[in-house]
Length: 336
Image (cartoon, rainbow, N blue to C red; front, side, top):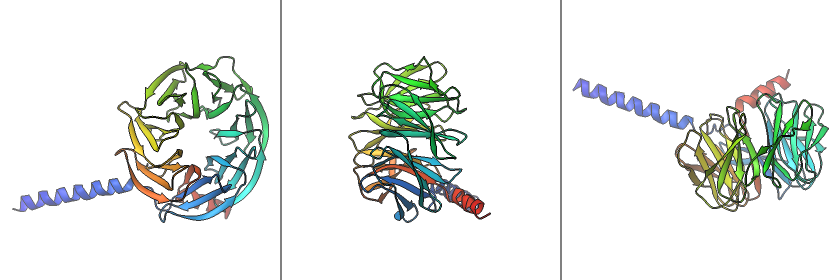
C-alpha cells in the first residue's frame, strides 16, 4: 500500500511538472505587443495579459510593417502611403521621427549590429539604407524590379532582396553598398516577405502564384519548394528563433501554415481573414495579426492550434513583441 501511494504521488508530481512546462510555453502576461494599424495610421500597444489596447501613437499614412529594435526600445514602421519610416519609442510610447526613405517602402530589416535599417522601396527599384543612430538615409542601392522582402546575413555582410518582378533574389554587398552581379536564381520567382533561418543557412520566401514555401541555401544558392497544402500564396514568412518551425501566412485565406524545419507535413491553423503579421512571443507562442479579422491570435505551434484570441478589431497589418525584462532594462538604463 505505501508503495502504491508513493507511485501515485510520483505520477501526480510528474503531472504537475508537465502542466507547469505547458503553462511556461504561454506568452508572458507582461509582454508588450506592438501593432501596426493601417486604417487609423496608428501604432497601438497591447498588454498581452489583459488583451486590451493600452496606448496609441499616431504615425500617419498607412503603417505596413514593423521592425523591432530591442537594444533601443524602438519599432521602425514602414509607411507605404507616406513614403517614410516612422520611428516609435515603445518605452515612452511616442513618435521619435519620420524618416523619408523613398517611394512605396515595404519590408525592412535591421542589421545584426543595429547600425543600419535596410528598407525595400518597391516604387524605386532600390534598397534604402537608414543610419539607425542619426535616423537619416545614408545610401540607396539600385536592385531592380519591385523589391519586397528583405533579409540580412548573420555577419551583416550581405542583404538579400526578394523581387516581385524577377525570378531571382538580389544580393547586396553591404561594405561596397552595391548589388552583386550574381543573384540567387529562383525558377518561378518569389513574392512577399523574406526571412533567414535561425542558423543563418537558409532563406525563406513565398513561391510566386502557388501555395508553397521556397527555400534557398545561402552557401550553394540552391532553391527548393515545399508545398503547403492549402490555397493561397505565402505573403509573410518567419523562422522561429528555436529553429523548429518555418511559418507562412497565406494571402486571401484565413490560414497560417507551420512547416517543421526538420521535416514533416505542413500544419495549417485557422486564425482569421487575411493573416498578415507574425511574431514569436517570449515562451514560444506565435502571435498572428489578421488584417481583415477581429482578433490577434496566439498559436501553439507544437499542437497546431489557436490557444487564445484577443479582440483588437480589423486593420492590423503587423505585430512585434517586447518582453517585460527587456523594457525594465531599457527603463533602468534611461534612468541612469
